[in-house]
Image (tube, rainbow, N blue to C red; front, side, top):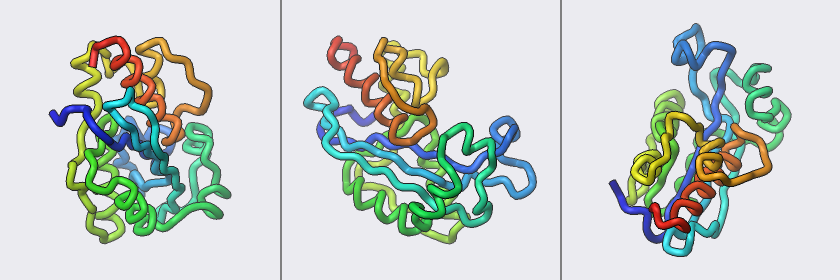
Length: 190
Protein backbone atom coordinates (compact mmCIF):
# COMPACT_ATOMS: atom_id res chain seq x y z
CA UNK A 1 0.00 0.00 0.00
CA UNK A 2 1.26 3.46 -0.89
CA UNK A 3 1.42 5.52 2.31
CA UNK A 4 -0.98 8.42 2.62
CA UNK A 5 1.65 11.14 2.70
CA UNK A 6 2.31 14.26 0.69
CA UNK A 7 -0.04 15.58 -1.93
CA UNK A 8 -2.47 12.98 -3.24
CA UNK A 9 -5.55 12.88 -5.45
CA UNK A 10 -8.89 11.46 -4.32
CA UNK A 11 -11.33 10.83 -7.17
CA UNK A 12 -14.76 9.42 -7.86
CA UNK A 13 -16.85 8.79 -10.95
CA UNK A 14 -20.50 8.71 -11.83
CA UNK A 15 -21.58 6.69 -14.83
CA UNK A 16 -24.64 5.60 -16.76
CA UNK A 17 -26.96 3.19 -15.01
CA UNK A 18 -30.49 1.88 -15.23
CA UNK A 19 -32.82 0.24 -12.77
CA UNK A 20 -31.16 -3.11 -11.91
CA UNK A 21 -27.95 -2.50 -13.90
CA UNK A 22 -25.77 -2.68 -10.78
CA UNK A 23 -27.26 -6.06 -9.86
CA UNK A 24 -26.77 -7.26 -13.47
CA UNK A 25 -23.22 -5.84 -13.51
CA UNK A 26 -24.20 -3.81 -16.60
CA UNK A 27 -24.83 -7.00 -18.59
CA UNK A 28 -28.18 -5.95 -20.07
CA UNK A 29 -28.43 -5.09 -23.76
CA UNK A 30 -26.47 -1.90 -24.49
CA UNK A 31 -25.53 -1.33 -20.85
CA UNK A 32 -22.09 0.16 -20.22
CA UNK A 33 -20.64 2.15 -17.34
CA UNK A 34 -20.13 5.30 -19.41
CA UNK A 35 -18.74 8.26 -17.52
CA UNK A 36 -21.04 11.17 -16.83
CA UNK A 37 -18.95 12.89 -14.11
CA UNK A 38 -15.41 12.83 -12.75
CA UNK A 39 -14.77 14.58 -9.45
CA UNK A 40 -11.45 14.86 -7.66
CA UNK A 41 -9.67 16.77 -4.94
CA UNK A 42 -5.99 17.42 -4.42
CA UNK A 43 -5.30 17.08 -0.70
CA UNK A 44 -2.19 17.43 1.42
CA UNK A 45 -2.05 14.32 3.58
CA UNK A 46 0.80 15.81 5.63
CA UNK A 47 -1.41 18.74 6.65
CA UNK A 48 -4.60 17.05 7.78
CA UNK A 49 -5.83 16.22 4.29
CA UNK A 50 -6.45 19.90 3.60
CA UNK A 51 -8.08 20.43 0.21
CA UNK A 52 -5.78 22.39 -2.09
CA UNK A 53 -7.73 22.18 -5.35
CA UNK A 54 -10.68 20.41 -6.89
CA UNK A 55 -11.68 19.03 -10.29
CA UNK A 56 -15.26 18.53 -11.43
CA UNK A 57 -16.35 17.79 -15.00
CA UNK A 58 -19.40 16.34 -16.63
CA UNK A 59 -18.86 13.86 -19.44
CA UNK A 60 -21.01 13.19 -22.51
CA UNK A 61 -21.64 9.44 -22.86
CA UNK A 62 -21.40 8.25 -26.46
CA UNK A 63 -23.11 4.84 -26.63
CA UNK A 64 -26.04 5.88 -24.44
CA UNK A 65 -26.12 9.67 -24.82
CA UNK A 66 -29.55 9.99 -23.16
CA UNK A 67 -29.46 9.61 -19.39
CA UNK A 68 -31.96 7.31 -17.74
CA UNK A 69 -34.43 8.69 -15.23
CA UNK A 70 -32.83 6.27 -12.76
CA UNK A 71 -29.34 7.81 -12.98
CA UNK A 72 -30.73 11.36 -12.93
CA UNK A 73 -32.69 10.57 -9.76
CA UNK A 74 -29.66 8.88 -8.18
CA UNK A 75 -27.06 11.53 -8.99
CA UNK A 76 -28.97 14.73 -9.63
CA UNK A 77 -27.11 14.98 -12.95
CA UNK A 78 -29.54 16.03 -15.67
CA UNK A 79 -29.49 15.60 -19.41
CA UNK A 80 -29.13 19.36 -19.79
CA UNK A 81 -26.07 19.42 -17.50
CA UNK A 82 -24.34 16.73 -19.57
CA UNK A 83 -25.40 18.27 -22.89
CA UNK A 84 -24.43 21.85 -22.10
CA UNK A 85 -21.52 21.43 -19.66
CA UNK A 86 -20.18 18.00 -20.60
CA UNK A 87 -16.89 17.22 -22.29
CA UNK A 88 -16.07 14.33 -24.57
CA UNK A 89 -14.57 11.32 -22.81
CA UNK A 90 -11.19 12.07 -24.40
CA UNK A 91 -11.18 15.70 -23.26
CA UNK A 92 -12.43 14.86 -19.76
CA UNK A 93 -9.79 12.17 -19.28
CA UNK A 94 -7.03 14.47 -20.60
CA UNK A 95 -8.09 17.19 -18.16
CA UNK A 96 -8.23 14.65 -15.33
CA UNK A 97 -4.74 13.34 -16.18
CA UNK A 98 -3.39 16.91 -16.14
CA UNK A 99 -5.03 17.53 -12.75
CA UNK A 100 -3.52 14.34 -11.31
CA UNK A 101 -0.01 14.92 -12.61
CA UNK A 102 2.41 12.41 -11.10
CA UNK A 103 0.67 12.16 -7.74
CA UNK A 104 -0.78 8.95 -6.26
CA UNK A 105 -4.47 8.68 -7.14
CA UNK A 106 -7.00 7.05 -4.81
CA UNK A 107 -10.60 6.01 -5.29
CA UNK A 108 -13.10 4.14 -3.16
CA UNK A 109 -12.99 0.85 -5.05
CA UNK A 110 -12.88 0.27 -8.77
CA UNK A 111 -13.16 3.73 -10.30
CA UNK A 112 -9.88 3.19 -12.16
CA UNK A 113 -11.58 0.22 -13.84
CA UNK A 114 -14.40 2.52 -14.94
CA UNK A 115 -11.82 4.85 -16.51
CA UNK A 116 -10.22 1.89 -18.29
CA UNK A 117 -13.61 0.64 -19.54
CA UNK A 118 -14.36 4.07 -20.97
CA UNK A 119 -11.02 4.12 -22.73
CA UNK A 120 -11.80 0.74 -24.28
CA UNK A 121 -15.30 1.85 -25.32
CA UNK A 122 -13.89 4.99 -26.93
CA UNK A 123 -10.65 3.52 -28.34
CA UNK A 124 -8.47 5.63 -26.05
CA UNK A 125 -5.37 4.87 -24.01
CA UNK A 126 -5.66 5.33 -20.27
CA UNK A 127 -3.01 7.67 -18.92
CA UNK A 128 -1.91 6.03 -15.68
CA UNK A 129 -0.42 8.57 -13.28
CA UNK A 130 3.19 7.97 -12.25
CA UNK A 131 1.98 7.63 -8.65
CA UNK A 132 -0.42 4.88 -9.71
CA UNK A 133 -4.06 4.14 -8.91
CA UNK A 134 -4.86 2.91 -5.39
CA UNK A 135 -7.91 1.83 -3.41
CA UNK A 136 -8.45 4.16 -0.45
CA UNK A 137 -10.54 1.49 1.28
CA UNK A 138 -7.29 -0.28 2.26
CA UNK A 139 -6.04 2.44 4.64
CA UNK A 140 -9.60 3.12 5.81
CA UNK A 141 -10.01 -0.55 6.74
CA UNK A 142 -6.62 -0.51 8.49
CA UNK A 143 -7.89 2.45 10.53
CA UNK A 144 -10.96 0.48 11.63
CA UNK A 145 -13.62 1.60 9.12
CA UNK A 146 -15.81 -1.23 7.87
CA UNK A 147 -15.92 0.10 4.31
CA UNK A 148 -18.46 -2.47 3.14
CA UNK A 149 -21.02 -0.58 5.25
CA UNK A 150 -20.44 2.68 3.37
CA UNK A 151 -20.14 4.14 -0.10
CA UNK A 152 -17.68 6.85 -1.04
CA UNK A 153 -20.43 9.39 -0.43
CA UNK A 154 -21.38 8.08 3.01
CA UNK A 155 -18.00 7.07 4.49
CA UNK A 156 -17.77 10.40 6.34
CA UNK A 157 -20.56 9.05 8.57
CA UNK A 158 -18.23 6.29 9.79
CA UNK A 159 -16.26 8.92 11.68
CA UNK A 160 -19.24 11.00 12.79
CA UNK A 161 -18.69 13.81 10.30
CA UNK A 162 -21.66 15.77 8.99
CA UNK A 163 -21.77 17.06 5.44
CA UNK A 164 -24.34 18.83 3.30
CA UNK A 165 -24.59 17.79 -0.32
CA UNK A 166 -25.76 15.08 -2.66
CA UNK A 167 -24.44 11.52 -2.32
CA UNK A 168 -23.61 10.22 -5.82
CA UNK A 169 -22.25 13.56 -6.90
CA UNK A 170 -18.62 12.69 -7.61
CA UNK A 171 -17.20 15.86 -6.03
CA UNK A 172 -19.33 15.45 -2.90
CA UNK A 173 -18.28 11.81 -2.67
CA UNK A 174 -14.55 12.58 -2.76
CA UNK A 175 -15.03 15.26 -0.15
CA UNK A 176 -16.76 12.59 1.96
CA UNK A 177 -13.65 10.42 1.64
CA UNK A 178 -11.43 13.37 2.54
CA UNK A 179 -13.58 14.12 5.61
CA UNK A 180 -13.17 10.53 6.81
CA UNK A 181 -9.41 10.61 6.26
CA UNK A 182 -9.15 13.99 7.98
CA UNK A 183 -11.00 12.76 11.07
CA UNK A 184 -9.02 9.53 11.26
CA UNK A 185 -5.72 11.41 10.99
CA UNK A 186 -6.83 13.90 13.65
CA UNK A 187 -7.57 11.00 16.01
CA UNK A 188 -4.22 9.30 15.32
CA UNK A 189 -5.77 6.31 13.56
CA UNK A 190 -4.18 6.97 10.20
